[in-house]
Image (cartoon, rainbow, N blue to C red):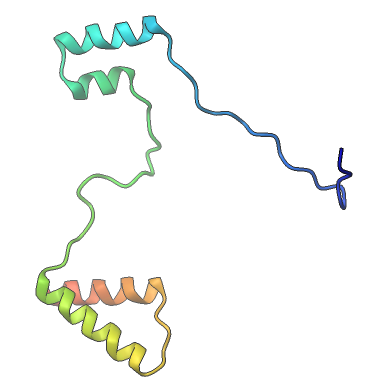
Length: 100
């Protein structure tokens, strides 16, 4: 066995995936026979964190707005300025305000 350097060792894997029993799967299917998919997910599904992004909160840009954003990106990079993800997001929000 190899000796650890500086006392650091690899963390053991956690194996978080679990297999459901046949009884649980059968209960889900019988519930789904009489209810909707959304109700079945609500009754048996995992409960996600409340901080998760809500559905429909993303903003999409029109073709003209995307073209303006692309032209801004090309102009900024032509001047030798590196564009970060945050800069791109901020400019996209500003352009979206112009087209609203």
